[in-house]
Image 1 (cartoon, rainbow, N blue to C red):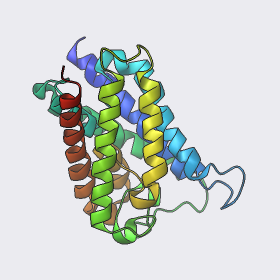
Image 2: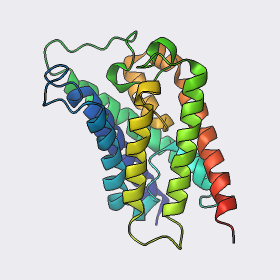
Image 3: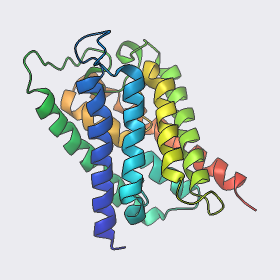
Image 4: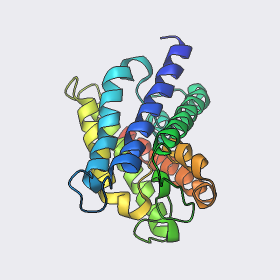
Length: 238
């Protein structure tokens, strides 16, 4: 497949992930106020992120591999499934897709009276954070550990589900459910990143602390992706 098509698929897939996952958090999580049956809450947001990956992988995975995440690209490289020369172009495409999604989501969310983005509020506009910017008030050490471990396990699932000996055709389901589970666990801690592009796309729309704390949501997921890739490369070696 031509590189331009692969990069376009990564751009579109990451755009879909951020628009769908972060969009559910911004527009639908508390729709109608806390406790309103129309609000989807933590469970709904977690499922939305999983569904974006599941549907994106089925639609675009055969074109680009369906990474939609710099940490996944690094993890697949560490696991021996991706070329180092393709890392930078993939990451650029992923970040650009995420930023466009963040921008469009901001335009949609701003179409109702009373909408405002407060850079000082935890989880504002689906941003990730630690300390005062963690939904549960978790410190940087807890946030870092959570993001590393969750991303590492995400890569173990991805590499295992796409292994040549795994059941054919089911990988996107396993990967989507894994991302759902990761969100169920870690939304209270960091608002769940495990994806530097996803974090960047919404943080740039907010500015302030979400941008200042982006370093953790690049470093920890990439470290976790590399760790997961190395672990599965060892596990899967005959």
